[in-house]
Length: 183
Image (tube, helix red, strand yellow):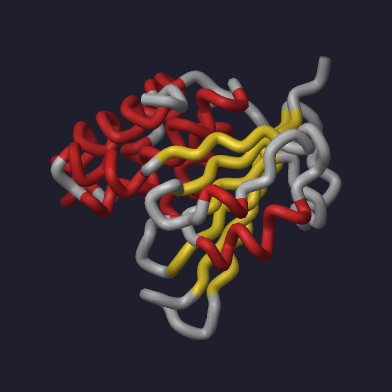
């Protein structure tokens, strides 16, 4: 059976959306898969909107453009409103329960994993790692790649002079992966 997963990752600029998109793309490449990564920025960088699309497949990728994604990582309310309706039936979305009203999260048509990524990142000691927590939850929910494959690719997206942050980012990935709704 062919492996194919596409995902839209979206949030405010500064939440690390592009970093986790890049990380997922590198992890896919490191696993020998075909990938595409397309960043999209709003009018402002930090504080504006930011989203990216990533496609990972063991076959050739016909188009990097995603109209109806199989997956989404949604880090804020405006992103939920924009992208949730586009997710294919049976798809999965990771929703930042720290910033998104749970009453607006669709359930049934799609699988929604509501995880308080900001709160978890705060408990880990670095609120900026909320993106890694969300990606860890996505990896768990989809089974796209192993957690170890993603962790190994951290050195591809974190500059060498910040390499001391790799263990903390790996810890945040693991925390998102380990999250169980109801915890």
